[in-house]
Length: 637
Image (cartoon, rainbow, N blue to C red; front, side, top):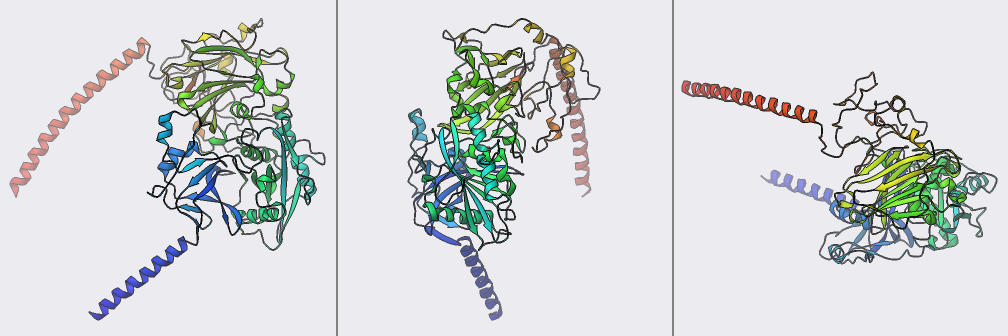
């Protein structure tokens, strides 16, 4: 008995020690003497896909640090995620802890939590009341020298950190690094030149000339550390501390952009990442010299989110019409700008931009590409068109993606009309999505636009290519829309010969043999129920239940470094990448109009009813047999 009691005491003692040790390891830091911290969205671009992480900025041992926020429930994030503005939202809690390079919020649903939310004036009173229990409050942009509305304009003082450790260094000399970022020694394609070209001189990335900085590059000596096996964020923080030693703790007050070039060999390798609406971006090894990586991350700094397409693993990057999609390990390319949603947000072409509410007004006009913006004299031309859907917190943006000049290497929807959707809550934009790429004669339908039950149609009447500038003649309308009594420009004059460019009622042989090169990343939401006027020309069997007016073709291999899309994403001549809209030739949801289809449906229902009667008969018979067997078994016992 004594031995048994001793064994029990030993067992519980060991488990108590283990529990205390586990508790101590989990709390391997300190309780922070703060009640709030500023939030930032960190966008990390890796070969495995994108990641957006919520981080908080706190001061530990006199140094500013940014760590991932943990402890927030999925329910809280789902409710509040659209309201978090990077660099402008404060998380308020009664208790914060720094735990293993993270910030733990202990009482995200606790009774001691006191929060207030300041919303913009366009929110209804009931919406304000609904969000009174949010954890955060919105504040000004802090000490950053430029507010969120001016980050995309004016002169932006920039410094690049060249790091040397005991065993590695940034894989560029100081002179070369200055050249690939600022073009100080002859490099013609840099983040400086690209932003200048796309903005038509409205955004100027300039190298800092502060003391100790050489042509915009600040040399960081970390020879007391080794890069091999050291966490990348440890190297980053050590380099930033060196910069703070020289210019003060608040780097956002001194610089508009700080670009950190991490040496090769660090733990947790990556491509690049940046914080939204902030000054800081970080690059790994050779990616510090990538033009698209530089533009993409600085894009995050000035408030841009990712540009997506479809619903695949990599789809939040998949819009390759602009720089907020995939990044490319190229020094001088690709030469392109931003999609319509991003361009509208940046405000660079505001004098050639039009907003319309298509449930009320029809819009007829001519869209030109970004490359022709600086050459326009005729006021009838537009660069951007926005369709506002305020009841859905979503907007649609329409542009003509001209492959020319500053946009000569666009990789998606070249010389086509692009339709982009983007959700936004309280003026906080989310990832945009490429919904459709439309050629001449094609259209895109948005069903139940703005929760109205009404379909809005975007139609490309024709694309004029016989002179300069090329333009797309576009109509946006709905059943009850009236022609705007004050059109943006002069009525369009349809050139001669255009009718030959419009598709006939029956698909032509040429159109059937020439599929679009744009991969459709989403299948349609429902099958096509209308039979085509002629059989498919494809010799290969398809999965379609009905013959298609256009054959399905296999995807062509892409020359870009983008991840290969799954085989199920084969493109078709019908473009449909969004959940709300469908391209030309697609029937509306639940459409079933042909008499043949109704006869087939009636036949199917008759066969189904007969099958159910036969099945019921056999089930009844089998049940009787089983009951007889059961009674027989019981009688034998």
